[in-house]
Image (cartoon, rainbow, N blue to C red; front, side, top):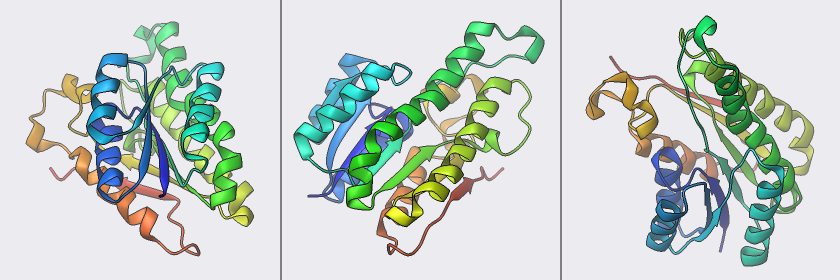
Length: 223
């Protein structure tokens, strides 16, 4: 059985990806901070649940160790845990800048670093859920955009460093997705990209031949 570890796996994009991979026969480890919602999602998918804060190094090590103990292999790592706090540069609190870089960028780095031994063994795939805000100017999202741009650069470097070992990485960069984090936009659900759209991209990525790689996917919202 192939196995996947998904952060932010209890809701939104992460949960949609988990549901798609479950349907395709993957064993799952779901990682998220909220224990109750995580337990519900894991129970529905028969997944291992690990309550953890991805910005915490010890938590990331523990999550990877728990996955290894359960499955002994890792074919897909999805770094989907994320947080966004809007605000113009002069109004953004330092703690909100630090939080977004810690969760959105540091967390992906930590999870990937601990996962690499198993990923190299399986010639696995890393999917980093970035954002279109990391590719264009996004007023009011300076920290979020900076973290996601960093995540795109991290993905490129991951490919450059580990292609010879069969590890591939993709930065998934959607526009506004119908998730709780996008509620502040005021847009109706049917005006936004759907979490399942992101999941279908991941389905395509895992079905590519070992010689094919898509380093970045931008999903635009049709307006």
